[in-house]
Image (cartoon, rainbow, N blue to C red; front, top):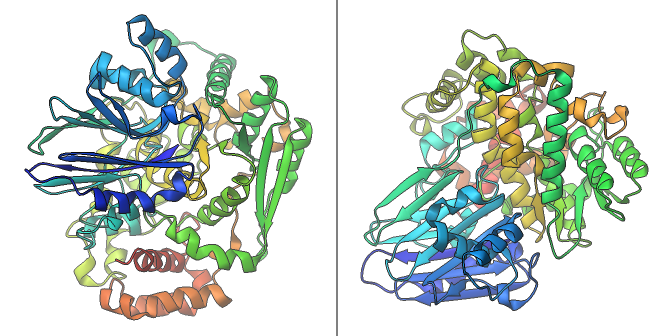
Length: 591
């Protein structure tokens, strides 16, 4: 796990290795164990390293294979690299390292860009071909690893984070109005290629991009599983699906233990993280480190779920660590949390993951985490609402959107409102595309391929990597996801959601963690904004920078200040926190 950056010139100029070094320095928290820059003519590549696999300097990056004429920078982990290495050795390739980076290089040489279809893992990488000058960028199927870029006619810059692109300088930082619409309506989800800044974009998940020497490029989307039933599965029972899911999940969890350092688990006490712990225990893991976090309660809402994480830790005899965060420390660490965001993310989970990662990184470098289960196995409350829908776009928007276009027009200053209902148009395009059989399938495809990427997955990457911690997400194993996409929705909707996963979990973990109300990382202070939190947000929105930007109508902000707890979105988010967080992020990034 690491951070990557670079510049590719499309003119006769030499790449700016100084700017690339600035970008790499911004990525230092992602890779505290090593750094490297490789520059050659029109290319400059940089890397920050977190040592997980092959701890020697043989696996250092940027990695250059002079014999093959290839250079690479890579962020992520290829879990099946030992099997691929064996296959490539059989094809005549020899290796100078023992890690997964060199396996990507050899696989690229052997099979071309199609090598990505062979990879089990999470990855963002850039390969430079010395002889042809072609540059290939690729991102994993679920976009677990980020890849941002800024492109002009003369130059391409890329990095693992948006702030790193900014650190290189010479970027258009004007705000993208369609992206702002997404942020305000689609619950802060800004899908690729957009970001909030016009001058910075991001490569979509499951995409390979090939740049010619003149800067022209072509994209290839290499993964898009159909959410449809298969004829050969007709007649499978609830128990049959349960057993298939359990076997696939066992393999997904096992794959994510490949490392030359210990691997722990972020244990919330929910069914998703609990079943990961249970399966690892089944597979013989002993002394497994697990970590949970809790906050002070506010407005009568409890701030921890230790009762359930304790239950799992005791059942499977883990080396368990409980972290309790007092309100004072929460406030103290908000600036660091916001600075760690590549893009503004409104979820209260961010501060939880940030502080949890800080503590976990003192003990361990790699953890497994339960993100993705809700989007793959239908765990959210809106899936039953769209089941049987005759107007899936309307019903999904009513359940998920923070506000509609007309309402947004009363809250944004006129010059910042997009010309069209950008968020609804985007969601409609995804929901109504072919190869999804039912309304629930359509919603699951949208959430797993769009919302998941730029909310839960991005949150986990940003907050863990802020402390040099690698997070692995077994529920986003692509073979598990392909299986789940074929399961009839009724088996997923059982038991108030994630029915088929809960059926599998019952064979592994105590029923108490399954048969309970769905939990989240509860951070009540950021939902019921008052006292110093209200002062913080008001100060940001009243600052000179905010006034000059003029994103929001003042009369609406005054309503939010007067009664924050009355302005809660359909997804139980604070409207005031949403706009305050946006302004604080813009100021933190110097936009």
